[in-house]
Image 1 (cartoon, helix red, strand yellow):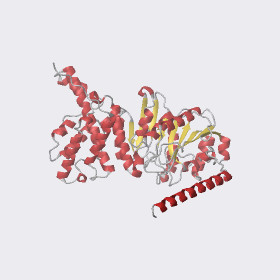
Image 2 (cartoon, one colour):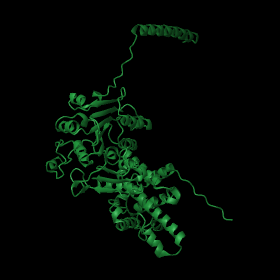
Image 3 (spheres, rainbow, N blue to C red):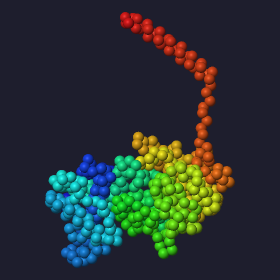
Image 4 (cartoon, rainbow, N blue to C red):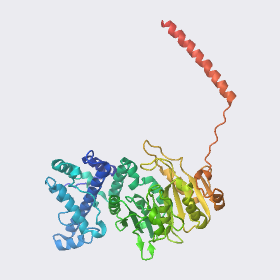
Length: 502
């Protein structure tokens, strides 16, 4: 009787660590920003190939040698792989002198065969580039890369790993590792998962929600918000100005089985792509972690903006924070849309045009719902503290909740981190919308007006801790006692030293 072969369960950690080790192929050859693209694109190719292989084997078991029927069934899958466009094909040809060119052609054919979903998803990744070394060195590195992905721990077939979540999580793990090592650039394409989780829970989108991130980076925040919706009943939209990051986002969405998401590639402020006949598209939930205080954001184009987003005032030339905020407000559905945006603290109190815009949003439109101060050093590439602003076009009162969550976090050597209990406390306080001593304060518009519409959190949340009163006489007495004990010890020490002949 044949012995039954049991499947080996591979943990998320094993997959993550194996993928991270695969990066050794390119370390020291190209910088982390470069090899990030090589590794993530190849991971995506391997995922597509393994899923395709699994489906093909399943249909063969079911339909035998009926090749025509099998091909018809495969053509209805989420994607199609043309002939000789699989990972197994690359394994067979890994020792070919033109293996870099073969990888490029496989990826190009996959894009061509899946234009609706995967067009340009491998853009900017050239496995035949001289950046990978001279011919022999380049081929050796590519052989090592292929061998790394032959590791049984990187078998991405659904019959082996189960759901797409494991591969999606591995992809997010790699993006976070790359962001951590990229310094300031890391913050341009990735929001720390704990911050994304916090904003997602604060927004709590409902079934059927249209959700948008106009500066979506690699898509981590957008995915976290979508995961809050029961039964995956949502529609996702995003826009990203960096082409390489846009392709990462497209792959990220696909790996999380959110490939119906519409992700556009262009500058949101100067060329919004999420538009319809009547102007900008409208959404139930709009979230973003836009670049902080962006210089050269498009001030010169703002007066002639065809979508008239700057009717409250034009933000300063060197600080684009309110340009992103006003864009988000204009794309939130009237009467029900909500906006959650991560901002630097300067947005809360800077004067000039920003003060005019801030006052209009607070006093006239009455859209601001909450101001949440976060700990410093949470984000990649910057140690400055940030805050979350929540706007609500369905507000039922004229009050604003201020939360000072800046002191509750897990400290780290390179970066601080929000703990689960910190996230839960912030979300619970927001949901209850109440004042908590030294943590939160519910302010009315009169109070904010008295502060000249300055939203600096310490003006509303008093976190001052009184210093312990020192009893000077008792302290002096304690010092005298200690000095007396010290003199006794010194006398004893001198006595012993004499006996020893010193």
